[in-house]
Length: 493
Image 1 (cartoon, rainbow, N blue to C red):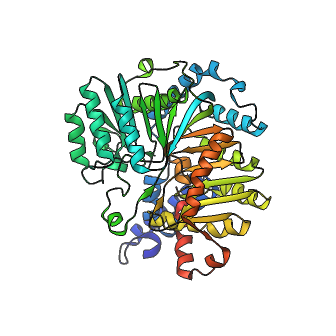
Image 2: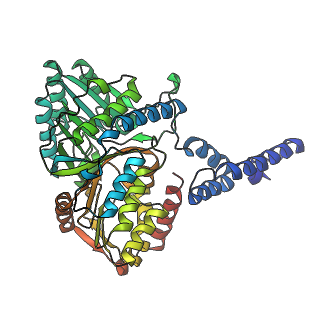
């Protein structure tokens, strides 16, 4: 009886009976509650946890079982989304998509727009940086040139003398010139970084207007599922230049002692953008700023300057819990299913749901050359095991799987499809980025951005070892067991 009710032997029979009835009632109720608006695999995993470890499973479900933000925040997010959609309605011109684009690219653009993305805009320039120090230097130069404002937003931040420190110094110098510097960072993503409190004091003394994103502050009635995070990386200066990508505002070893010991660094990409895409990235920042501070910046942004310095056409795609349709996942699946010749995908965390797994394997099975680039060993053990549980399915379908040399973490997130479309940004190809994290991606159209990202992945391939079915079949039974356990936990997200 102890295993069933949790009541020790020797207790009065009436207590045992009540505990038994409550236990049965909870399980029956959860059968009708858990499957609501969840993937069947997710619901099944939660129900297994609740049935096999009822008290722990129920507590975990109450803490992590919902990816919904607070009703008030969702209402504000929906209101902002509607206002942005309305204000950019006149900007949506199908002629802005390159004439060389296939029909399915136009369809993907419309899908993005219908699910909350911005309209496509031509006339942009794009410069991709894969050198960590070069990226940081570009941020310093841009902020040092600021005249009116600098908007800075990152998931993880941490100061150091050689990489991120000079960026923070540039922000403080800008304040000294009279520039308004607004800074957002994710609370849980950053608070464990060494020097976190010192950095906050430095920014406050320097006059930087900083705020944490999605704070966990139950005493101030600010509480939500703790792993709902804002994962975006955006820098905008005076509405004329912007940066976005995978790179955080921290040195390449993430200030981890273990990383320094084994020589581990994060391999990143950061895009420098000029043109109308800057406006849209600025609007994404302003949205997050308003959600965290209540301050409306939309009237003070330097928008619609008419500056068209380049030839790149792109579309900003924000996603996350504020967009309940999982619009980034739908975009990835749409592009993959329409691929005719080649798909190249890079992600540090490839933990697909069924729909993405089927899209990738189906593409390979119908003759598309599918190349996937991942780390040989990820920085999160549980996620790495979950990711590895999908390798057999991918390899059996004919997907070419390349693993970046250990101990480096290949942190870039990008995909190219044929010579038609390319996406890069903060979004991984995992369930967390589809449902739990606020992300921002750039969808770019035409052969030029595809070639630029493919060139980056060509460089990655030189530092990769291709994984074969024969090699993967030799892993131990313990390894398979750990991978499968991690896979079960991943679908509970």
